[in-house]
Amino acid sequence: MRIWIARPEPGATRTALRLTGLGHDPLVAPVLAMVATDDAMPVGPFDAVLVTSANAVAALAAWAARQDGVAVPVFCVGSRTAWAAREAGLPQVRNARGDAAALARLVQGTLPAGGRLLHLAGADRKAEPAASLIAAGYAVTVHVAYAMNAVPRLPIPVAQALGDTGGRALHAALHYSRRSAETALALAISAGCGGAFRALTHYCLSADVAAPLVAAGSITHFVAAQPSEESILARLSALT
Image (cartoon, rainbow, N blue to C red; front, side, top):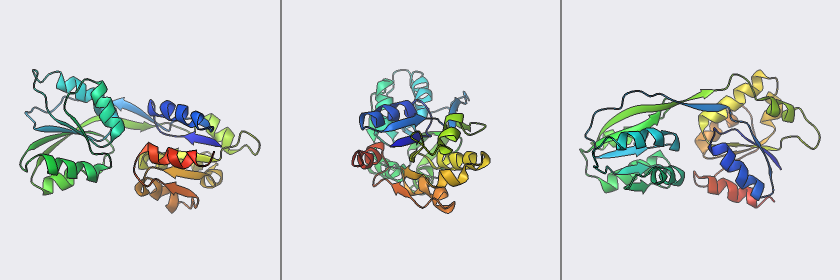
């Protein structure tokens, strides 16, 4: 099955390698590109750092290097982010193994209320986990470490594949964020490929990711049982 991977790099290439291993034909064509903000980091001290994307790990590592050897606990939303944090040399990494709500629960079960938390986030962020933690009595400072910029037009290989009725036609698309799914949809419509895009089988990390596709009439979609790549790949493995 030929599958469009719309997620940003470097994750897109990693996912492509795994899909190839499952016998699928991946088409790597991200619709978002990460740009670091390089804004000045907030002044601490902080009792812990929250990271909701591996994209923020570079900023986290730079910040940790300036802490004079003080190891601050790092709470990560999922396994990929936790792995990236450990690879960057962070010693106290905790993995929520879920979504932003799971991250908020992990913090509340680990740290007493009233603690000062630094959330390294993207420019396009959701209310959680900060909203739940603030309501529970924590002081949360949000620092925008990066932005995800949309590409200006539908990647040419995707437009060609959506218009192909032969052996190189697309069968499915993977979506790992709501922003990525929304952007892929908008670009396909702008390129005159909206109908072909909606006809694909869309594999989504969560119901929130799938929401804009469902609203646009994409009937055939799969929502991962857990918000993880493993859940999506398990489904795709069963189709080979």
